[in-house]
Length: 378
Image (cartoon, rainbow, N blue to C red; front, side):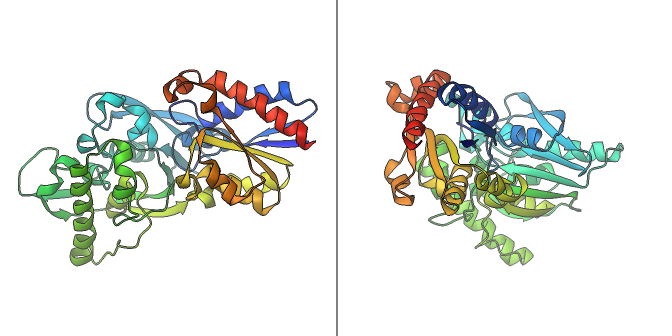
């Protein structure tokens, strides 16, 4: 029996690389004689850097930048592939939910400014002799909804406001913004973005109305953010002839918008990155059982996120799929294919908080359950 272990990261618990190793450790004790292959996945969000580091044999670099609320400086890892002359960045390491304690998260005071500082450092390394012809950034798992205004200002763009404020790129000051001015020249190194979700910037299914409340935004903040998003989209169309109204670049609070205004950017859906760059399609084809999962499986998981991509490809290839997760929308899974087996870890605990604190213990119990499922299949 050939088993492919291909999870996404479990937010606030462990990266997909760490989860893959734990699953293999536990499952090897439960299923005698099986052949295991680890293929940790990322759709651009949490764990993107570690997945790329291992998959592409990256040289590790690091840079120190302000965190997304400007409270302290943080060290962000970067990965360099000399053969491809490419640097890889995980945006969640810069402004992800994992970088800010829950009690300090404030979407109105959070921005993408630090990402611009990282890009400037990469360009300095290039000028100093490091050959860099492309930067790949995974977008996902963010704590921000600034439409990329932080990185826009950091790379030389200007925000014109009715009120003068040093940090007018922060969402708290968006209501006073009247105009944008592009930097004198664009950032010179091409950037490729891996988008964890393909959502519009504004509208019912846009980044703000879909994700802002999950990041702690109040109803009033959601309204102000949506108004600003609509303003920027219309302003870019009227002043610069750029139409972002239907662009699927809402990942990470619309950071792709600000980047696109000051750099040469191309967008890659997570599905394409996972199936082609990580070669997940071939791995799934060559295995009998596919084990995937993440912290919370819900309808967003099927919006071309890593777990959903793995499930869809496995079903297409008529493979047995087992989904292991903290909590799951089991009806959604059954609607995809009744043969999918689901192992939900929350049932082993009294609370979500306890399941996060004792994640490894819960994963071990889940693997015992997977062992029973596989023995029945055999």
